[in-house]
Each structure stands twice: as C-alpha cells, then as structure tokens.
Length: 232
View 1 (cartoon, rainbow, N blue to C red):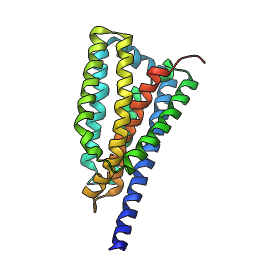
View 2: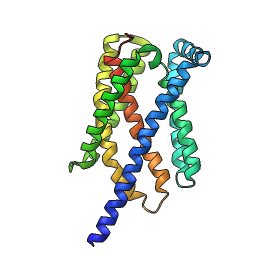
View 3: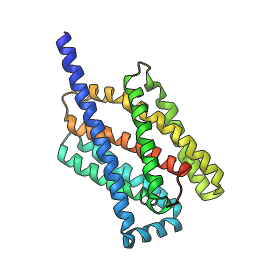
View 4: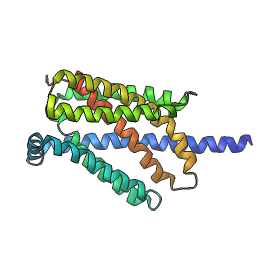
C-alpha cells in the first residue's frame, strides 16, 4: 500500500510539474507574442485604433475568441496531444492581442518590475493553494461571482462612466480576485489529475495550465494598471 501511494504521489507530482512548466512557457509565449505584435506597428496600430473606436465590440471579441479556442482545446484533449498543442498556441496567440497595448502604455522597466512582482505573488499563492489542507474548492462560487461582477462593472465603466477612480478600484479588486484564483486553480490540479487518470495527461496538463496562465496575465495587467508608468 505505501508503494502504491508513493507511485500515485509521484505521478501527481509529475503531472503538476508539467502543468507549471506549461504555465511558465505559456506566459513567456504570450509576452513575446504581444511584444512582437507591438513592434510591428503596421499591424498593431490599425488594431489599436479600431479598438479605440469600437471599444465594446473589441472587448467582446477579445473575450469571445479566446473562450471559443479554449473550448476547442478542451474537446481535443481526449483525442490528440498534437492538435491540443496547436490549439493551445492559437489560443495564446489570439490572447496576446490583449497584451499588445502594454508595450505602448508602459515603460520596459515597469513591465519587468510588474512581471517580477506577479511571478513572486504567483509562486506564493500557488504554493499556498497546492499545499494547504484548507479546502479551497469552497471558494469557487465566490470567485466566479466576483469575476462576473468585475467584467460587468468594467464594461459599464468603459461605456458609461469612464471614471479613472472606478478603474483603479476595479483593478485593485481584480488583483485580489486573481490571487485567489491562483490558489484555487493550483489546488484544483489534484482534482483534475484524479478525474483524468489513464487519459492523455500531456494534453490534460496543457488544458490545466490555461487557467493558471490567465490568472498570471490578469494579475500582471492589474498590477501594471495600478503601479505602471511610462517613464523610460
């Protein structure tokens, strides 16, 4: 029995390590893709100008397209690792458009500092979520309600109120919210592994990493919105 438990723990540790590896590579790919798009101003400037003129539609597309690709990735995970990987890259590439503006709005120093702060916070919260004995699955409803509220209020502020103070408050709440999501999603890796034993764990690890990549990116964007500046 102890041997079986050690084997199970070892397999879980291997799966978890793979998820965090994909998370780190995914974040790096997203940043590099966003940077490459920003440097190609013949491509980026028309998109930014169109987005500024059609903010609501741009926001809807920025959410809808990655979500559609996410569902496609999930459906492919049980079939093929290769197709799941291609879909994963397409998801990150499409989502990198949301990161493109940061290279115009903030200095390189601010981006590096915010990325470092996000990485430290991510490691701390991921470690807490994974090793704590507290059942964080009870946070699910609260986090989801908070996320929906933030999205709705952000859209309303974007269209109607256009308040910089409200945006600051929204970003502060978003930062706290995604710190919670990092801990929650890290603990949830154990449940994902248990539910998918015998499946294509490489593909499942890719899918599991998407939530953590999104947690990292949203936390980074929130920190930049609060603390970032454009002083070179």
